[in-house]
Image (cartoon, rainbow, N blue to C red):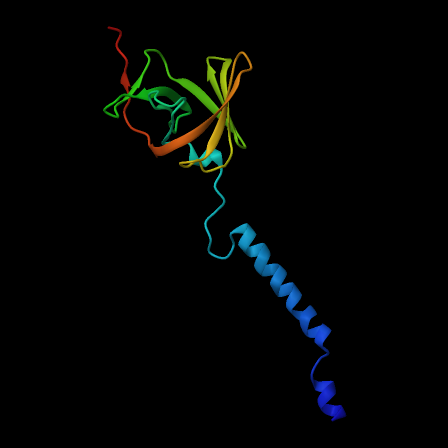
Length: 154
């Protein structure tokens, strides 16, 4: 019986042997190393997409459309769902972590701060204007970027 006891390790040693394996499994899942997808970044998520939101109940849906060349278009969707923008040049955007700085020339026009790196329906972001006003917006949908018409004055 004494020989048999020596062959099986004490209970605490068996538990300790599993600890490194458990830690590696947790680290692999957190890092996406177990065949999971890479962690998305806002810089990767925005280009080629249109982020839509409704500023107020009953108002036309508005959007920011980000393209792969660093340009951003602010516009609205009409009753038929057609995307329109005011006349003028598209602004540019820069992304740092979850913050998007929208510039016209060298001047900062808006600062958007997203709650998550991969914006999606129901997510939120804040819009900080040049006067310091901050408003929170809820994303109504995210769609692929597509052509935008120009609003013509009547």
